[in-house]
Length: 304
Image 1: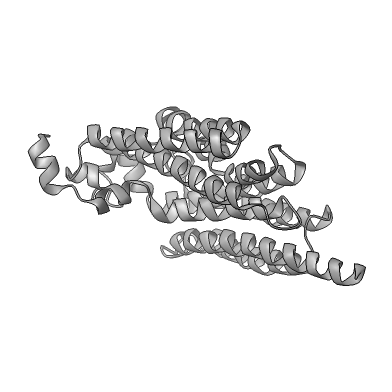
Image 2 (image 1 turned 180 degrees about the vertical axis):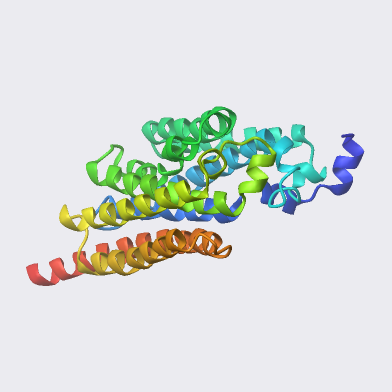
């Protein structure tokens, strides 16, 4: 595409769309929760501000790289064919420059204004999603989202490290919750878009093993998600507010998964599960935050 055409059609919104803002906002939110959970009080202005910005920019960079690497299949899928690259509103070269700029700025910010460990782990997460998952795993195995989900599960641990400079078992527990949540979240979407994935040769689980097998796996992973979501209470990391929220929101998640398994003829349930799973994760991590500071307040009042 010529520069003149690119300049004529490209807008700031096209660049913004490449960053997958809704996905990045959820990523940043879980990272911020990890920051606050890592200490009993205020995590500090510098790691909070620059850690949030750095992790957010790195996630945005990974999203743009994902757009570039998937541009040739996005054009054949209803869900993605209106994106800036398939429509030609932006060139791949412009998108690559943008992704590289975001990645470099994020690494400099994290290394010099937060701490080197956060920068290194964030870089590995970026490579894991943008390269290992998008380039190889996505096209190689129906277990792509299970293995590749590790990159998407990293943000709360990254937030924790941004404040403390070290990994902790509680941070790894936050990572584990998102790791086991990812397959049922994404497989529900994969069922709804099965024909599109089949058309472009992406071996998502519903394409390779059928919808019934995928629905069963969604159910099993949802049960696992509910069980693991209780572990922070059992380890003393969180209190009753979090536990009740985990049971209520996880119970509804499980009910939807059961309904989708029991009613394979339903065309609306997969997208309903997919959309709810996003709300579920946001509510769960919001409960972490509320519970954490209420526990601190109660402990302070008891000591006083």
